Structures are given as structure tokens and as C-alpha cells.
Length: 300
Image (tube, rainbow, N blue to C red; front, side, top):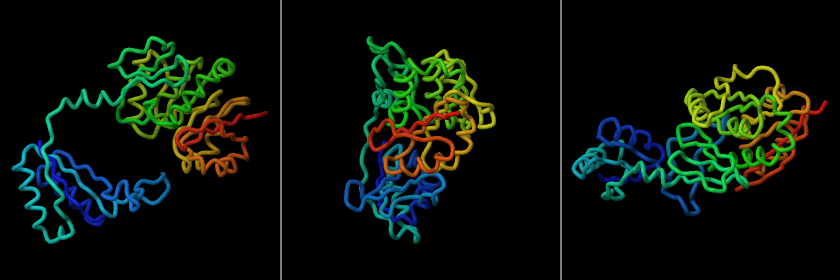
């Protein structure tokens, strides 16, 4: 296979990508920040509720994969001849060695220790000898494999507090469940029943499959399946939607229940406290890689 690398201005990134895929036979196109690791590097994606992201960076690098050099050369020749592509520049063309892509991908995901004896382990690995509680979970379309700091903090909180609090976790809710990993973790640590909800149909299916793989019974579906009150509520999303969802999430808490929120940057913690103050007092109880975990208890 051959990789064609092109430099393009932000305004034409989408047109170039579409042309490469739809008309010029590219097998895939990846867009990167051409200014990455320099002072000109810029952020592209924001939080839900913010203005939509642009198709590319001010200076974008497009990596287009072709089956052979002839196709890559033809694509570059045709593309660079277009009037609208005058700002597009050929960066390079390079041979990509054939690899076992499945094995290469799997090698990037290894068992993760959440806390003493508690591990998240992909299906192609054997659990470590010291693992006493294991969640079997493979990377997929839904967020939540244990590799991200926000997921690790939620799971770590569950493991650390279950000895004292699990007796009150009759029902647990994972709102915005992604892979369902938090709901699964709650059941494995003493919750008698869990409900996992997400607006993404792929996340719901992933949650059901992951629950089955771990021998965990839970109810997964859209937000409408969240009914009544719960002894434990997780929401690992982002700060903006967590603020908008504050009244709803707090309405799911029974008296004495714990609310566990993640997806919050450290600089957003004080604002979150203010937003949730009408219902409960949030406290930042863990920090990891610039993210903070916040919890609060509904009092009588």
C-alpha cells in the first residue's frame, strides 16, 4: 500500500477528503494538524453545545491510503490539476509496509489496573495473576475502555467505596453509558441492578454485548428507560452537558444516594459546584491527567 500526504488549507480540507474517497479511489483519509508539536498547534474539537468543529486545522495534513503507487500518483495528479485545489500541496508519497493490522491494534490495548486487584482486560489477554475482579472489555465504537482518565477515576471510586457503600446501591444508573463499563463495574462491586442509558444506539448495543461478556445482568436503552430513583448515579460525559443535565441527574437520586460525575476539567470544577448547589454539594475527590472526579450525596 502507498500513503499519499497532502498539505491543505482549512477551507478546502473537506473538498479534498471527499474527492480522494469518492472519486480518486483512496481507501481511507486521515486529517491531522500540520502544525502539531509547534507553537502554532491548535485545538479542533470542543464540547457539546459549543460551535461545531471545522473540517480541518488552519494548516492540515491529509494522509490518503491507496492500494498501489499508480493509483496514488493518478490521484495526486488529478487532484492538483483542479482549479479549486490551488492551495493544496504535495507533501510526499511513501510505501506502507503490510502488517497484521488486527494484531497491531490489539497490541495497543493491554490489561489496565484500576486499583489493587481490579483490572480491565481485553479478551485476547489472560487476566493477571493478581486480578481478583476483572471486567472483560475490548475497544469498539463506544467510549469507555478504561484507558481514559475519566473512566479510570469512576471505576477507581467504585472499587474504593464499595466496601462501605455497596449495600445502598440497590439500583445504579449509568447515564451516557458508552461501553457500559461503569454500570458493569457497579454490579461487579455490589449493585443489585443497573440501568445504562445512552442517546447513541451503537453505545446501547455495545453495552448489552459487554454486559453479556461479563455475565452481568443490566437494562440498557435510550434515556427513556431511566425511571425512578437510584442509590448510585454515574455520568461520565463533559462539563457542558453535565451542567444542562443537573436537574435531571439529581432527580434520579434517592435520599442518601451518591452522584458521581466525570468528564470535567480541573478548571471547570468550581463552576460545576455552583451549578449543582441547588440540589447537592459537589466535591472534587480525585484528579488524573488534568481531569477531576466530582461526587455529591443527596441529603434528606
